[in-house]
Image (tube, rainbow, N blue to C red; front, top):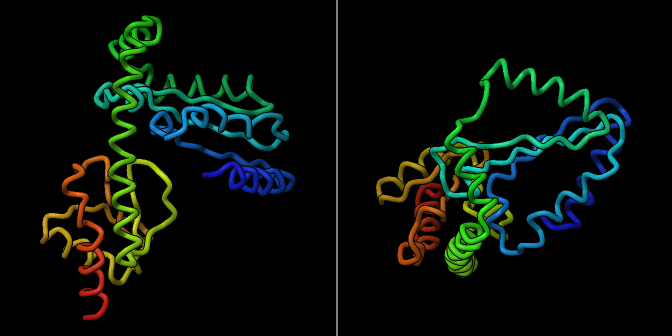
Length: 219
């Protein structure tokens, strides 16, 4: 989301908080793979000086940040004027529901952060993945525009979502599978994981999806 979009969202949330308590859960699992390094942390300035009834819960996935998916390592960061009360509540809830995160993940991430040489090597590797994602995204967006494939707003990231009416969604999903294109069905369409498709297979993908959608919806 752009800064202007965030300002609008926070304005609406502040207004809603006048009516009662508002709790917002923000998933930032992939934030470290955004194009602009500045935006990875500048986002949090929108959660400063929150009104009493507005709480923002930021869910971070350290295992995704470090591309160590199986380690299941994460954190919950709370922005609120009720931090002490909420920290007490959620620390007790976490302890009773899932106890602690795995020790191996904690050690690995701590070493990565504290060892400057490891950290710099990680940043270099991370940038390679960011560039890889952007190349796939730019190619898909360019070809989608050329063939008129509709999409939900997409500026960057791991996934692209294509809007579809519920009556056609499952048929389109199956027709795509028949051509070895695997998507995830969502309430408002299907999601394409650009993070899992090599650049050579991204080429022509938008055209194929558009062709299949036309075939299904015009049948």
